[in-house]
View 1 (cartoon, rainbow, N blue to C red):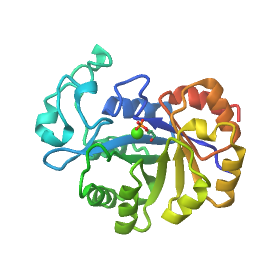
View 2: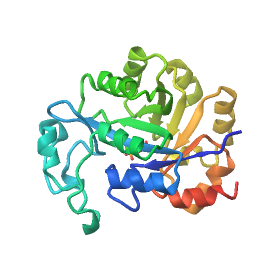
View 3: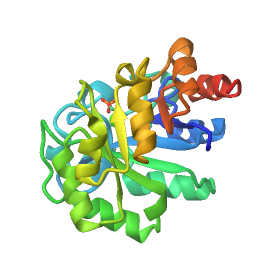
View 4: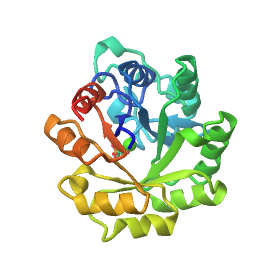
Length: 247
Ligand code: G3P
Ligand code: CA
């Protein structure tokens, strides 16, 4: 059985501004197996990496990503809110993240979370599949989203694409739902998995992976590593890697 993957949530987000190149670089340097990141579309339809649909929380700017061009977004500072050492860090495009990973010769798993709900980005799925194809990342990418319709569209465009269903509250027999949508994985909030061996067992039986989020406490990491699930998404990859050594 393979080791549970340590997947860095928005990069090493406990130590660097989330969803930025320094955050992804730090996570890779820590030795993670995977990276999780969030994507939106700018006004000029570039795929940019940021969690919120607005830039207010993580930059010195204001407004919706969808209302700003990439050039406009690049004018803002996405690092100082976290720590002045990251002053003038720019918002990355998905392609810039991929370039960084190539430069670092990193070949881990990329979990691309499609943010869609408050703002809808028609056509984002095609754009993402194009980027994945152009960079030959097919077997290294899993798309996830709370918007399962987006994931259905991903599968319609690229049948072989792997999708992971994000959810926060319990779904009855989620492995059946995953099978129904052709999902390779469930991405439940971690309390759903914690103390739920039945879920782990059923998913294993059905060959549906479980990648759970966001696990930052040693106690929770320990409990979840014991289950030997497929992936743990964490803001503290160094801690997760340390805890994993015991299992
Ligand atoms: O992909 C797991 C996790 O990132 C989902 O929640 O809000 O942190 O994007 P959020
Ligand atoms: Ca996310």
